[in-house]
Amino acid sequence: MSSKPWIGSPTFLLVMICLIVLPEVANQWSLSGDLESSIGPYLPEETLIHPSTGAMVVASVNDVPIYDVEIERYLERLNVFDEMPDTALHVYRSTVMSQLVRRQVILSYLQTTDFRASEQDINLALAEVKQSLAARGQSLDEFLASGKVDQAMLRRNLAWKIAWTRYLKSYLTEANLRRYFERNYERFDGTSRHVSQVYFGNPENLEDFDWDVAFREAVFLRDRIQQGEISFEDAVKKHSQAPSAADGGDMGWIKHHGPLDPRIHEAAFARPVGELVGPIQTKFGIHLMKVHQEKRGETNWKDMIDDIRTAAAAYLFAHVADRHISDSNVYYFGEEEGSEIDPSYVRRFSDEFIAP
Image (cartoon, rainbow, N blue to C red; front, side, top):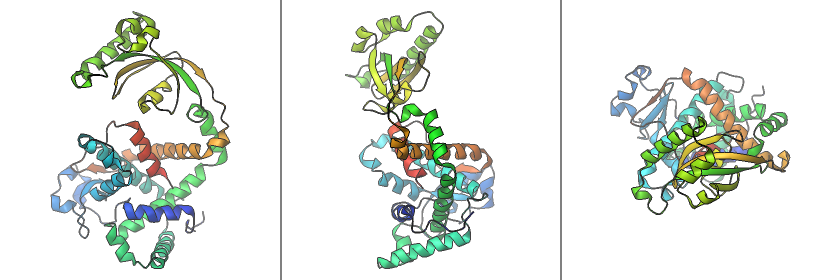
């Protein structure tokens, strides 16, 4: 494999932007050997502070730290602080952190393969960074200080960009992209599905709505339908609290992407036609859905090639991370891995992280 990095390519410009707003990977400063033991999460606070930038370690992968500043700058880049309530901040932070952890897991793996970034590759990329900075009248030290990054962080960031770009170039061939489209056509070609629902909720007064009770009722009703004790149609008539109950709970034809809550769109394509989906929870209530019909779209796959490439890259990111994370020493320090959040934000995080 050629050792020539991607200097001069459009992705290099993305690196420059990313390094200003986010030190995306941790530096080579190693935590103490105790980190590999079960007491890793309980190291003294002073051990978890970067010696030169003062950034706090919130997680680590194979002794490589993930810093709080990385999470904060990523959220700032996505304008999350202006769009979500303070009560949800912890969950969003945790979700970004889990993506940073997975990225480091992937990099650790790629550096053992032919896709790895050699020291020569990184040195050439670093020289390109210095040259670009000099053209703007800025030194490397000034650049690093402005983003609370040290040179080790920068080199690891460049290693990620080089190795991940090579990996994607190898796998995202035209044949593989077409194969991915054929297996996931409904996400790209405008396919729609006819869906109806049993709705539990009170949109006019959700503050007094008992979410836990409603969810349990929906699960119980789903089980009764699946066991043949009641038909879906009768369940809609007797239990749905939406005006659409009079029309059989009809939600109309739904595409994979659209104006409804992202969970609704995703659920509509989560199961084969004829099966129940859910219950799922949105900010509007609890939904037990059934897919009745599917109508294929007519968009040609080549017209959606950019979207297909992005989705396939996200799939590879998740696949490689899931495959190798069990072989990695991962610890969280005062933070928890991300749980469920708004899928629209998950996609935004994913698109940002998997871009070469």
